[in-house]
Image (cartoon, rainbow, N blue to C red; front, side, top):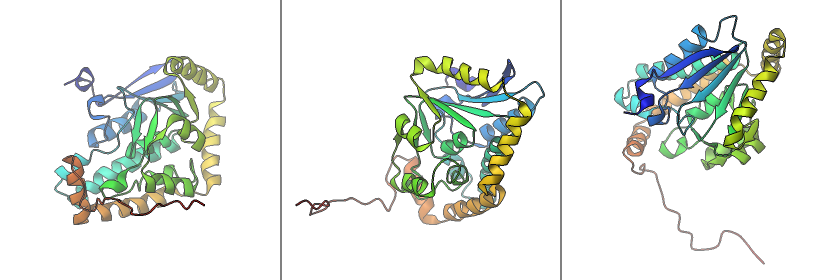
Length: 276
């Protein structure tokens, strides 16, 4: 057990009008389970919603920001549909609350962001990261897709084509690529991150809280995206996939460090690129 594991799943404190929320399950890559999801939701409502709070900082304890949903929780449910839906509802509700929160939410990204962790980061208003940050959506490998990530990614941070390519290729994007695509808003060397993050909050605290809140509401409305309706659709899509026996076999294999049953090998006999 690490020092972080004796802490609550997530903690928060108020510092100069900024609510600092920390994910504390570094030994598991801050994988999202009902305990951590519920803790984050409670901290948003209890510690971040007060009048003294002007902005939110979301960060992680450890070398990774978040490795996504804890698939072991789904397996431990015995693939019970209602229990899986409850966990997914917690995730969707948290991301929706972060994105529609009336105050600016800044996510500090250090290290890897995978699967559902991409959604947690993308739900924030502003992402500032280090050169070690990376983003990866590899769910197709074990038989599902980042369905509930997509409403906060496609159309809000990435074009549909970029989002589709990221998912279908399952390629890890480095910090420079993420900045170019719009997954990150700023990238800095690790030893500059503290200074640059403080500079960002100094600016945010100079602005009108009502203007910031109105900006968040208007940009969502102008996007034409109906998040509740999309999340209902994506949840059912994901749950239906999880109820598939083949998908369950793929996840079981992934959790055991093996290959899913559909994993093939590519051994072409001819060149793929035509050259004169």
